[in-house]
Amino acid sequence: MKAWRFYGFNDLRLDEVPMPELKPRHVLAQVLVVQPSVTEAQLAAGVRTLAFDRIKKRLETEAPVQLFGHEFCVRIVEVGPGVTRFKVGDRVAARAKLPCESCPLCDTGRGHLCRKGPIIGFQLPGCFAEYAILPEIALTLVDDRISDSEAACLQSLSDSVASVETAEIKIGNSVAFLGQGSMGLECMQIARVSGAGKIITVDVRDEACAMSLELGADYAINATKEDPVARIRELTEGNGADIVFECAGGSPTQGMAGTKSVTQAMDAVRSGGKIIGVSWFGSPFELDVDLLRERSLRYMFPDISTLEHLQHTVSLVAAGRVRLKPTITHILEGIENVPKALEITANKGKFKAINPAQVRMAV
Image (cartoon, rainbow, N blue to C red):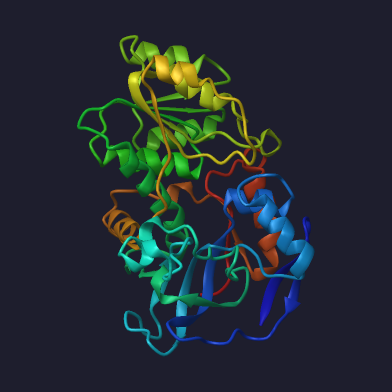
């Protein structure tokens, strides 16, 4: 089969490789649609972010190696021994981070807390290939009302569900979202159907602000045209939002806000409020902990998404309660376009993309 393999940062090649060998409790699947995450697009280019050191080590010791491609929709073509939930022909999507199934947490029914298991596309081969071997415990069935392209977004959406769950939104809470990329828009929509009151979003792109309003925000602030903190406070009677989701931070070389958005989140949330940290930064940065303490702020981070989160995303999208189709702005045809998808995803502002670019591999 054909598969993209990395020989180094900024060096991926479309190679002919042997078909992967089917294992117990795994399925062999044909890749229908795959999209690189923003993190994968950064890592492919050698930008420091989540898992940078681990990927660097793998490239130095194992190259050429199949990497990335953990957001996908696939069709099962063969099931291995012990698979009970799926059959040939099923369309499935997956969560990326898996429990190890052997540590004390996993042995006591708390596998959702395990951090020792593999990640699809990082320790396990992902779906930048024509076929993939995938563990059954990662997968959920895709509803017929969900397109292949929408299904490829479900992994990211499951992380957004976990983020909103962490916030414990109360009915009528005012909620602000800094950043309206794919996860910012997803978190916003999930918060809307989870009881949020006034919803305020912030981005630096007109197209992202327009999309935010289309998908349910009450107010969308372009931070290049007005002070987002002052505007959020104005819209919340001077108090600040009850909850602020920070979804904009990351490498400025990839068009993100660096760490500025964290400071803005601290200034935009009311005293006693919550900040939900969705972004990855790739390196340590200085934080005014005394300000967090003085204002009784809670800076919280989402748990990893579980199979239950993933299954919930299927219900949300199938019922139309969360809309993904409008955010899918770039669909490329054929496995040879994976590098272009990485380029678009790494430079969404330049290409006016909302969601990561997708590659349709098969129909």
